[in-house]
Amino acid sequence: MKTLWYGGKFHTMMALDACVEAVVSDAGFIVDTGTKEELQQTHICENRVDLEGATVFPGFVDSHLHIVWQGEKLEHLDLSVIDKREDVLEAIKERLEKLSDGKWLIAEGWNDNQWEDDRIIDRFELDQLSRKHPIVLTRICRHALVANSLAIELAHIPEGITNPQGGEIVRDHSYRLTGYFKDSAQELIKRAIPEKSVEDVSQLINTSVDYLISCGLVGGHSEDLSYFGPNSYQKVTTAYRESIDGLKRKFRTHLLIHHEVIEDHVKAAPKPHAFIEFGAMKLFVDGALGGRTAWLKEPYSDHPSTYGLAIHDDHHLEKLVKKARNHGLSIATHAIGDRAIEVILKLMRKYPTMNRLPDRIIHGMIVNPSLIEQLQQLKVIIDVQPTFVTSDFPWVIDRIGKQRIDEAYPWKTFIQNDIVVAAGSDAPIETVNPLEGIQAFCERRSVLDGNVYGASQRLTRYEAINLYTDGSARAISKHKERGKIAPGFVADFTVLENDPFEVAIDKIKQIPVKMTVVDGTIQYRKKD
Image (cartoon, rainbow, N blue to C red):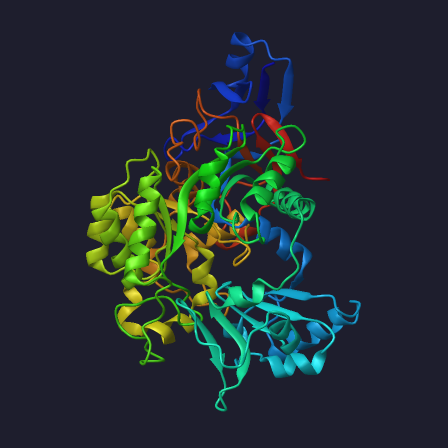
């Protein structure tokens, strides 16, 4: 059943200024483009959709996010919008008053870099708020959390415990646990949190995906298969199939496979699904800049005693890469610091992928010139998250020093050196709205002080939008069927009320999403 989409301006993203007036789709694919009159003469269309002057793009896809966690953020106490330490504590107090004794309070997104008083909240302060509720506060980067004493007790963590590989258990001057757990040490607390059922996870996916679609996203590359207790892989994949059924809910979902559940994946041998596919094996090399756990070649400027953390020792990291290759998989690697990127690129070169999917570096924030050449040679995809610049500056300058600032978030350098870049958000760590990401690419303006950082690395509007369309498609080798408005490509559209090429740059993120179309089906329509 053919559909004529007309009455709008379609940016095909085949080239800058390449636009058409109307599109015909059939069975989820674009069959023709042109003027309304031409298409009406050559096609009999049972359905007609008047876009009423809207601007249409190939459907935006977030190349790196955590769909289930985004659902948790929408349901949990959200601390990411609170910029004062004392207000964070007050928000926790207010939420505790609504919980019955024994219920866990899980809060998301606190960011000490936004506080005037940037002391990390400790377990003793949380104990003053409640000793009847286990409390866990996850930092915005999700590479650290704070837990109160009851949560620590329920996790059976003794005072004399030593740091696990790739993690840190922070202590005070008296060698007492402060409740602050970094990177892999977080798992000591998380294992005590009550396990979610398939129904719980499915509801989180429903909540998340419905929100993502309302933001104009037609799909996302997510990593969340291993974080929900025993049998996590089976539980989460079952929940995805229940939620994204291709009837009530359509969303192009590409799932990375955490190395800890890779054997579960191989054993399960999941059947093909129209909207759910599996990609590379996900692994972590380092942490995050905020907590000084990203792994750098030179020490942190504001803490010269540390270079960050290696999540795995050299031997184990190599074993993980070999495991992926033995299963015929490419790898998608969290690597923020230049030392982390250097180490994983060496292993990618030693064990090249034979999969149709390219290897991926996720984040790639501190990239020195020697790494640029290696990225070119290996044809590695870089997944970047533009809104990190808006939230990381200016404090990140203290972390890495002014001498390394030209190597920080080098988006334009990637593009100029023909390195394929895909755009995402790392939601819920950052806002998932792709229009905010496009504006951040073009401005590089901090939300903390209003200044522009790294102006030479700003992208044009076309480049920025292209990273959410063609870039995200290339990251999963789908660029011959997704990311363009042209015959043979999927009928996925992000429909906006205004044209991002015509509004002021600082107004891009304010453009309303009018409609989101997946597989030729309207999945979201803005209410009048």
